[in-house]
Length: 452
Ligand SMILES: Nc1ncnc2c1ncn2[C@@H]1O[C@H](COP(=O)(O)OP(=O)(O)OP(=O)(O)O)[C@@H](O)[C@H]1O
Ligand SMILES: [Mg+2]
Image 1 (spheres, rainbow, N blue to C red):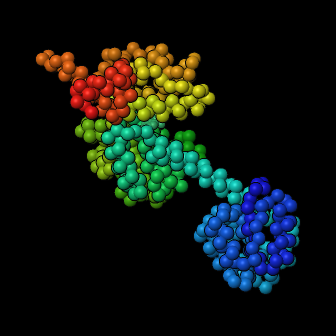
Image 2 (tube, protein in one colour):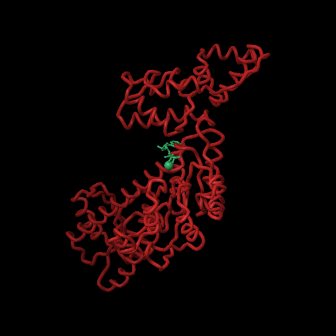
């Protein structure tokens, strides 16, 4: 129970107001008393009030008006009404309109305390719940998606447009490019965020079990089906169903999925009754569905339905300018997680990570940084902390400008500086670090090549 809760008592009978305040203050609550409804509302607008205790009949305002206004100004605030025997009916109506409870006159002090304790406890729970929701939203909201490249800006733009709708979305991208992260962000930024997000990976489930996982089954539908069971569609009702690795879904299941896409109805395995569901579908794949269609492995009609809104997540090697940002984000994340103070990463290590090809994309980079943080002895991430396979493959995977014979060394230098500047988003100290030269040297060269 929280004792710091701030309680406002509105009562035009001064002695009663003071008596209530005194008994609650003794138990440790922080009380303010006012003698009119209008003064009360003024305080509710101005201060953060946790609980309002008001007489139902005041000389200037009706207690019901106080209730209505309070809930408008601060929906979390609990309102407790005090009423005489004559107006119990009104008090009951008030509870239907959101009052926490009512107290009968003359107010019994023990009862008052019990009621206030209960209201504060409830408030605590509600607040905690809201905090948890906020945490979830931060984690899966757009804020949890790192990226400053043009490609990522394009994706943020599309995300904003589609998350307020319930359109079916197909997310295509190589392994580790953030497909699931984006799917969750779409859900948690949309109108369904308070309803479930349910994920199912078609590739991870045996073909024979997939249908029952998705649609549920009746008792006795097949050997081993001892009980009736709900499927993911029913669990995701009013929310979002994330169908991961959709390219691996067998054709027989695709037919049933298509039926759902057409009329929102599903059938449990072993039943011939249809169930109406309201589910938003977000699907993901790292395969080219167009090719699967040509090969007869994916239904064309289903492909067209999915392809209405298609998000392509670029591989990390095509948006190298995000690498440094991601490195810094993950350093923060994992130094917190492992409770290690990390001073930074050396320019050499940065450079190596920048030039690596990242076939496992962001997941690989994330794992790499975590491992470096775990293994660093002095709080600085250096080349010798880089996992061996990345270290070894780095030089062979060097991307960058290609220079034909006939070009001068100066031209090469100019070109390389320009490209590196672009990668570093125009950040000069970053550029100098990558090029392995001092910042002043870089400034001189920028000057010489008129790159300012
Ligand atoms: N833009 C991003 N910013 C920060 N973290 C990211 C970003 N994209 C992906 N991640 C992180 O990288 C990891 C891999 O992402 P995710 O699981 O969403 O990828 P995926 O495309 O579903 O991979 P797979 O194809 O292997 O299933 C996750 O830990 C995720 O949080
Ligand atoms: Mg995934």
